[in-house]
Length: 41
Image 1 (cartoon, rainbow, N blue to C red):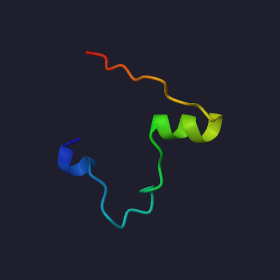
Image 2: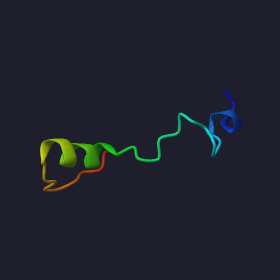
Image 3: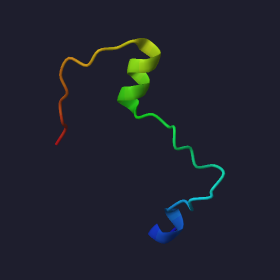
Image 4: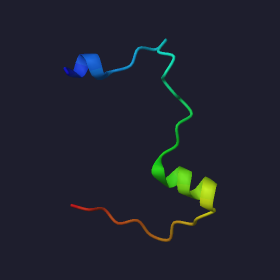
């Protein structure tokens, strides 16, 4: 699949603009608090 075919169209009915990131989902659903973030290199 080329990169041009992997980009959703603006009128795509499956496009969910309200999707949460992993961090946002954990905070909202579990009431978590992020103390410190680490980056993996």
